[in-house]
Length: 431
Ligand SMILES: Cc1cc2nc3c(=O)[nH]c(=O)nc-3n(C[C@H](O)[C@H](O)[C@H](O)COP(=O)(O)OP(=O)(O)OC[C@H]3O[C@@H](n4cnc5c(N)ncnc54)[C@H](O)[C@@H]3O)c2cc1C
Figure 1 (cartoon, rainbow, N blue to C red):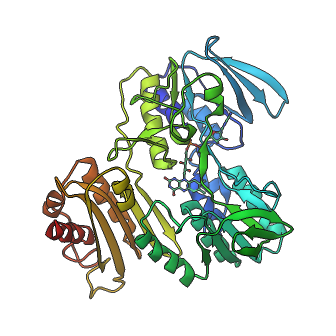
Figure 2: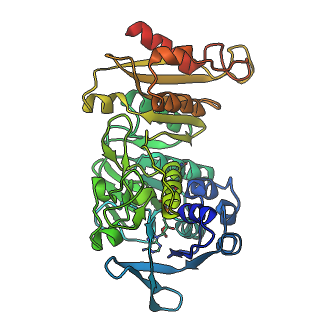
Figure 3: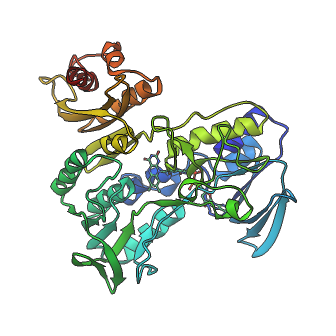
């Protein structure tokens, strides 16, 4: 919908049709954990623009409950199942935008396809999940997968009064963080009452039990946070090239390998600005930016999307967590000779009410002092500081330049040296 509305702004004359197999448009999946946890009252609050708004204000012909089943590139048409009417229809196109998103990766183990085992990707999933949770006792909830969606869902079910266990097959939760920083997240979760089990492999689900390599866990409900897989089957069946993790290959204009076919969002690849490698990062921030670029190009403009840093923030059990660029582990994998520095400071001036701890880890290239990545964990006010580092990395700053950057200060907001600048100073000393 972001691509469609961007194209409409530039070209009032285009005929734009949007096909959505579900019941909603332009919704914030990011808000689902807060709906499940009860901080947000209704699903409607998560909808930025309704289908009627798109129809009336943007003149976009939105067709809900219409599932695209085939792309015919040679015939320039999309075959579609009208799920409401139960019939097949087709639409011709001059230009096509594929924004089919991603789907939860379900572990391939016995018993996974049972109603008490759920993934969360769309508002319809969230609606079903909450309705199901109301019909059962929901005493024990097991979250499988310790990424940010799994952990946010875990917190949501603690807020609903459940005992929550998070099971993750890796050495620690939040794989997009280094182990030392992830340990701070685990400790915050445990203080919140969540039972965290790392290096535990789920082998099956049976009769209200999650069967694992470390024994059985009782569960009234299982939420799967085992990552997502790009929904690229529709495009690849049409012969459109796919790349890393099966995501649709796109160039800087978001153009796929097929003429006149664009793609953006969770179904598409991105270039990592530090590693230079193609990656699949499923984030709403990236989806919106890529879609804006696709929309401009569809309208005949010239826009490019440079790439991503995987900048992400989350609030997990009252603790704010954030990351951007490469972790220490990723920097080593990419062949960088990197220095990693971790500092602990305060979110506000130490004497100011509400000052709380913040830990910043900064990863820097030894040779040219260029900042490669950072991770931040702390209390209220900590996480959004990651945007300073994301901006610095995008501008190819060295730590020296970050130290010299004229950042703001007053006691209610930070110490006189912002924790991010302190991390840069300590890094420079080490270098
Ligand atoms: C619980 C949760 C929390 C999240 N939190 C954050 C966050 O805090 N910050 C952040 O940046 N990102 C977050 N994300 C990720 C973010 O929601 C996604 O990156 C973003 O929604 C991707 O947008 P998209 O348009 O590519 O895909 P989607 O939003 O998934 O939209 C794709 C749409 O295509 C439809 N579709 C698929 N196939 C077809 C077909 N064949 N025919 C018709 N329609 C089809 C689907 O029904 C879906 O509505 C979160 C995601 C989840 C699930």
